[in-house]
Length: 176
Image (cartoon, rainbow, N blue to C red):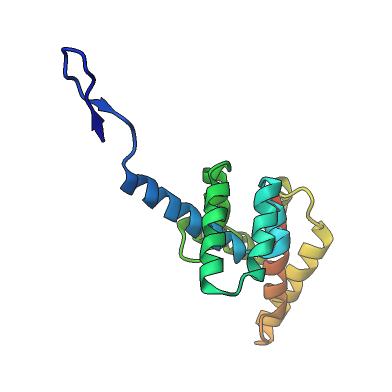
């Protein structure tokens, strides 16, 4: 919106964002708040959120009436203004299977599993450098079991367990 001052130079003064832009940003923050509500409590605990926002997210389930929930989500959106939006968005993208960040994380885990299934000790050493908290013996045992299952044409139970173990380590390393 523009304003004119009473002085001789009738220069327009820009007030900043339009009402439409502010509304779009508020709707985006409310949508992000809805995505936060979908997270599990342990996932939500890993985010750096204000106490007010944590309380508001916890109270959201109490509102069952459509109007009340809409008002409460407006309040959540208002509280989201004080948060680090980029950090929250990055964190949420890791759980959204349609996002590139989630796919990249998932493919990295698959590549590690495939590399460990080769049975080469240098691959295990590289993995241990990347994830020092890993249990070397357990990973080696799962890789051997997976190779044995593949030879016997059995279902890849050990390979799935290996994937899950790698996923836990990778998620912990990313703070998920």
